[in-house]
Image 1 (cartoon, rainbow, N blue to C red):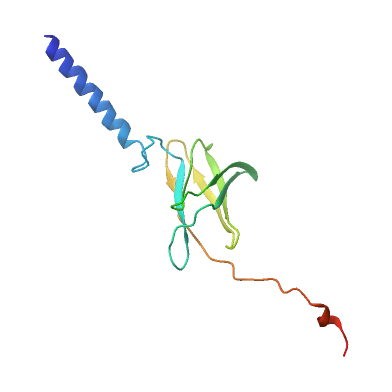
Image 2 (spheres, rainbow, N blue to C red):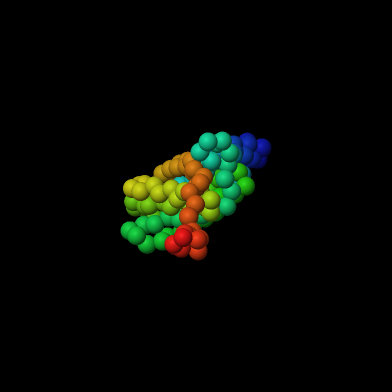
Length: 133
């Protein structure tokens, strides 16, 4: 009798563990479900970009800021439901803005971004530029 009860309890625990595992993000190892996640890569080479500042704005108010990891991945958790604007910034790259991203309760969203290097440079006039010869 005790062995049957133990077996039923073991099956119940394993079953609930499988359900919980399916509710998390695959491969992150943390067991955490994220509201929004994604990756940031360089537009031409498709190589990941680390240390990109990703800012989430809700109703023009800054909610959270995260930074991409060494593989270009980022994740936000515990975002309030609503319509967000996400801004991706890193020195040497053009700023990327994604507006009207709807975050819903208990629904994950993935947003992958390509950033283009900023090859623009400012021309600074030299003193010789303004002289009359």
